[in-house]
Image (cartoon, rainbow, N blue to C red; front, side):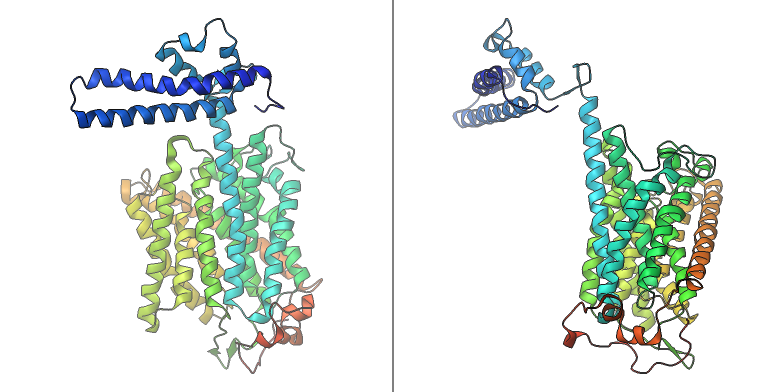
Length: 528
């Protein structure tokens, strides 16, 4: 509750009670000490004095806090028939306990309101952490690509969130969580919540939608028209992500979830968020074709990023954001389960970085920073599905396997001719699928290796296949449609000069620092 001002009775209550609570603390201390310490030495007496002082201070501060939280209750006490000074210690403690509780709509004291508001605060804080992941994605993508395209990449990440926020509020939320016709929601368009929880749930789900959308940006970097990217971003935010999300998470609000009802478990989105974005990235990279000069005479030509430290900073920001992504998906602080989720998330990320480091070191004879960074992200993506049900030891295994998988996948896709500048397909698509499968293997209840049951594994496989078919095929149709209508890929001159100056009319850095780090000669198919 909020109050416009303070009445005279409020002032009276505060004046009386702030002076009374320290004496009550002393009384409590005396009562406890008389019963437990009948005979003490002189030095022990000094300890007793300290304890009495601490009790008085603690209860004095508590009284001040309670007055701020529930002044009307204290005013009632001050104006009551019995002076506060005449109450017993037990009665005073009962008043202190009651004053820390919230009131319901009928004015009755209850802890339920306070608990609900604490849950809402936790959900919003988690959403704010996930929002910060947009900055992490931008840093990773900019660092792993060339300086001449940095501003373009920043604009894509900015508009992913802006376009996604508006369209998810207008259309996506309703398709994902509205009353369902069996395939998608049909209500709550242009969402207007009735309770505070509704608004908190909306902002939490909005930042998840933006995460799925921005995954594709890295895979299509340095060669896609800005207007074409905005069309893609709008479609995945309004249709692709919400419709599949409704099949898994729709029942979390007012929809239905046919995959979720079958037992498909994806706690925070290894598949719903990351694989959906990863398979869309695969479709976009295939339709666009490789960057100029990436492949020459059957040989892979590396195009190094211009700022690995910036990419590293991005990974740390993403890692921090994941503590909102996974623990925040508990949607409440009840039972403190979010702490366990935070531990499994952190263990998997750490193991992923080390796993990728070991594999790349053995393979290429050097500890490659880019692979280690992507290994941490791979571990985070993989544990996201089962962070609430996979034991801590198996979360380490899940992350370590993801770290190895991301290196192998990135190299194999590169050799197959798929140019993915930041490894988005491997990190989010492939490792998202692995993490979803890991639930069927390692979950405490129903895991093949923990209980011997196979049902969960089969359902997880079904969800992985459905996600791939839905996201890849719809995104493939979308990118092909853009290519043959308004145009998808920039021309040769634009790509060589860089998208910053050609698409946006400026450089991200002073021009003398925009140094070409890719091939100096380009030949072959432009993929237009």
